[in-house]
Image 1 (cartoon, rainbow, N blue to C red):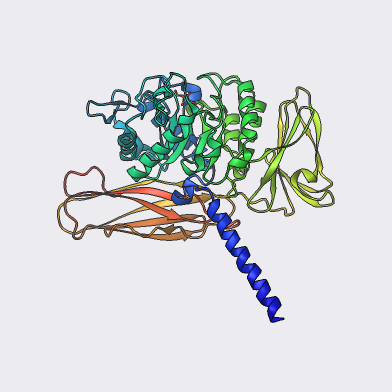
Image 2 (cartoon, rainbow, N blue to C red):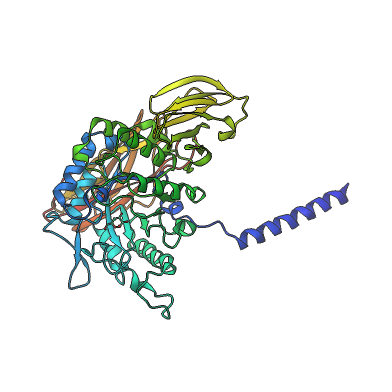
Length: 535
Ligand code: GLA
């Protein structure tokens, strides 16, 4: 008996040892988002390239877009990162540092960021890994990586897209190779350097790599950034191109295994709401991007949206599968003629997302097998249609849907009738700015209110330890809203500016998966003129 136990223990020790050796040999790949907690669901926001290109952007356009994003309901639906893309934002000064283009952005790039933050949105900017940006209108980061990332941090950027144009000079790793052709071996080292520069700048920033698939970023970029383009541009500015969009979807679909919380495949900006798309195409396109867990970065003119465009882009049930905390990218599990069955997307509550896309030119009756979602055909399951918002009774042995030409059925299938929607965070502001006049100690207060749109309340946000001595934050909850009450005390502080980025963390209560970290800026000016009091 004893011998057998010893033998078993011996085997167990040997097994543990071998397992340790194996794991030492193949450590789990590092994911950048595991540290910063950013973009744990696909980023949502607005970048104007598809509609506008780089030309007409200026401060007023971005501000008007911010206002339209809020008044149309897009903010409430979760669109949060906003910025001018290649909007001719900056040049390089004689000192080698970036400087805002004040002719186009009179408040400067920091001022534009403040406007965005004050409205509870996050600030997105754009640059390039090469010598110049794609239109050549702006300098790229080549040989200025650390200085430029410091500028983006000083402008309070929260999201940075880094393009891959004019990178011919980047063959650093291999001086022997010197030609004008873009070398895809440069991609990983160049973006890794930019990641190091961002980390050195100290501001948490969503890093969006834009090498259009060059250098196969899905194989290595999760440790460097939060999303990477998998394809070329979806549109030439001003023109939605349906066949190009379908090409991007097909290429992106194959890469589903690489996506997950904090590291996303990006088949490019949305074409929703652009001229030339039918309502059916708008719905089908949005459904594809939702089931692919693709970033939902609107790229249309938000000031001129039809009711139908708004209704499609703010469909919280469709957005719910895109923003699902499990972060699985759905893919095609079966094709029948021109019909595609997309599945492989388990959701946070145990249900499954399914997209039936009739890519043909005639209406079709399409059968979804329960085996398409890994269930026994004998199972009886509830089905919810995410476009008609109807829950259909129990089905056994699958379900047949009638889908018009080019249209979709976007479904959730579940053992339960509940169909909860995961949370989306909507904040009233991401910036608190305090000014204490004079040297006498003062106590100042300001609050951030965070609302949850989704079925369940969240636990209390947990503020990260390590706040400076002048700031305390207390969190209280009133149903789906939470208040982060900030108290600033100037006792013992010398005259001057103070700044901190506050981080709070939470979990989604059904799946218990981490939510994207909540960050906001707090400024304090002691003495001096000061620009803001309270919020
Ligand atoms: C590239 C990118 C686009 C856009 C433009 C700006 O083409 O892929 O998304 O940012 O540059 O010039």
